[in-house]
Amino acid sequence: MENKLKEAWSNMLGKLDAWLNDIVGAIPNFILAIVVFTVVLYISKYIDKLVSKILIRSKLQASMRHLISKLVSAVIVLFGLFLVLGILNLGTVLKTALAGAGVVGLAIGLALQGALANFYSGVVLSYVHFVKFGDWVESNGYEGEIVDIDLRSVTLKQVDNNLVYLPNKMVVEAPIKNYSTTSQSRVILNCGVHYDSDLKFVKDLVITTIYNEFEAVTSKQDVLFMYKEFADSSINFETRFWIESTSALEVAKAKSEAIIAIKAVFDANDINIPFPIRTLDFPDGFLNASPQEQSSEPNT
Image (cartoon, rainbow, N blue to C red; front, side):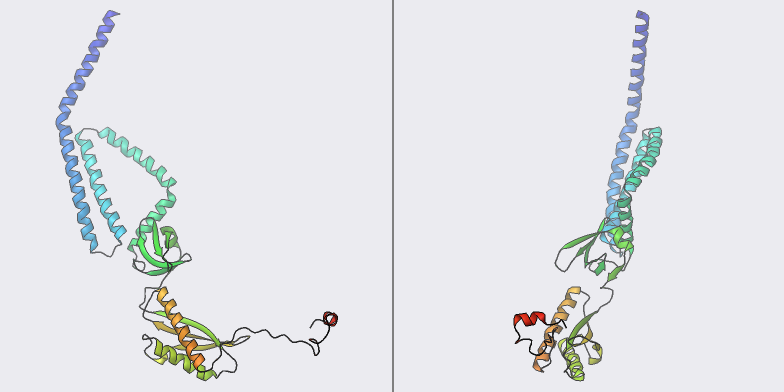
């Protein structure tokens, strides 16, 4: 028994001695690994700034430029980590880590399908040219100015100054109406006049009023005027004209100014804008009849 204890103690001391020799022998590699990783970190930060400066000249969105620079920096750091593992003779650990990364990556991909879809859609939106900062767009039932595009959502500022965050996937898959792709917007105004009105005079008056009120209307031919229908109480018309703006707010302001101007000239020329009227036709003598007689009158 005593011999076995001595043998075990001797084996343990041999192991400790071997480990100590290995540690002492690995100190130069360990120092070299620290130096290499420190240099790699410095290079990654420099490359990050360099890529960001280069991409500023491109037409990419700010979020996409930031993403690309960070990805390049991460690749350099990952490469440095592989170098460190190789210097430390940890090739087996490296192979195990790579094998485990594949399984973990698959599990994360399945769990984060929605987030990854938004991420991919954000990358797509960063490349397209018909959606960019400052554009006034309408998508998924929301309308506003694009104030931010990141890897998760598109941020719209609405007319009431509220912010709407649309997931990138919804924006990519849904139709987008961009009011800023052209330099002008069309204002459409509907109104009606009384049946006694001189329709030719009304048409000329509205066209002249719009021409005099808005600088963007350079000629009377730019104003489109059409009578639409014989309604219950009025003859309805529609007038259209262009303004030098793509903002929905400016379109609303122009429409308001046009309503004020048209109402003023209509009042000055005794043109009536009728409101719905209901006429009640009573039988002769109905108003002078007693309540009992009124209740006995047949319905008409």
